[in-house]
Image (tube, rainbow, N blue to C red; front, top):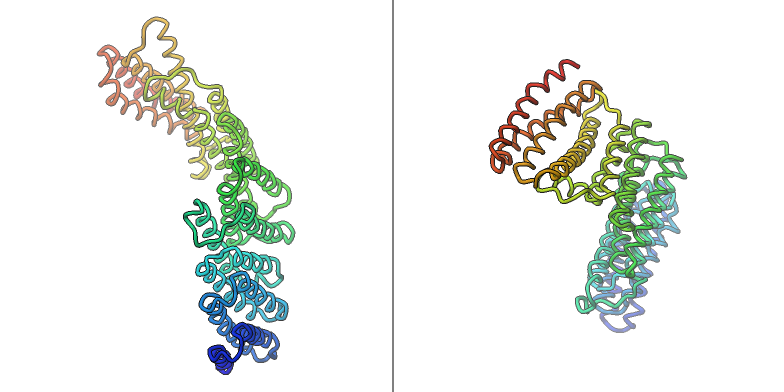
Length: 491
């Protein structure tokens, strides 16, 4: 209370105009700093003295700096930001690693006041610089792990301020006339720096110190990368997306090198593998054409599936299935399957679609599923086998339609009968293969194909078919229903 009384005395002196307001303002700043230094010099047995004196310093500095900057306009925003930075550095310098409570108070007051002043003054960059400086100090200091809550608060303030910078400056200058104009470099730097700080911190903890990656570090690194990526995409040159794609591929390669080279802890390796998979997918989409993307993702899917099966890591099989799905969409395979099974075939498939079909079959063969595996593995293998089956059925329908076109002009009833014939044949083959090789997903797909034929008879054959072809479709379906369980029991 004595300290706050002294602050009010300085405020009264400023109002009497006996001294220059700037001199009184600097005296108040020094007064708050002295209480902060005193907080680091209390005796160890007085446990409450340090946090109380530090809070007193914060209660003096925060309203004083707010009023000086916004009400009296004595200090411009860069000077206020410099004072906040000096305040944090003073706490770090005098407190060292012994008085963590002083660090905690200084981080809280500087991060909160920087965010508030950035919003109120409409000058974001100086306060972003202070927050980034503090983030670097806390991230690499030896006592940073002892106050994770203040590290999270500091990261939240820095992320929020940088998001505001991106959101405000993304539009034309006429949409933010109250904010100063900034060049491209100044707009790109905050996102890049916060990602470098977060990435360097993760590398230091996981690779150098061999510690388990923290949940906060995982989340903050992803947010920081998004900040850097959005900044580059919004404010970079016309080739900004290409540069971002190349950066993603480089980071993906580095992540996989760490996973297979130096990382031994399970959670850390899993996080790095997930990051690398997303970066590889993003890099391919940004750097290559749809054909090139499907080619590289198909190769990556096969490699991920082989690695997942060899090292018994289902996460790699999941990434392989993800790569296959995106590659199938980029190559036109999904569109080709839809045309062949639902509408009229739109011509032969592209070379990329055929290549992805081969990759899907290789991934399913490499999975080597068995009846005793867990349900996540069964679900993945079922998804991959479904994609392979859909592609093969589409190719068979295309071939049969081309063969029928040699004699007649295929109509709707011809297409309906060909699809029924194909699905019934495939259903029997799947039931036989599932029983023969004890692969449960093949049996399930066989019965799913028969259910699809039942729906198809009502939705397509009975609506568009010729009577003779309707009879043939129903006959094929009946024979399949009778033969499928007998085939399964015989094996």
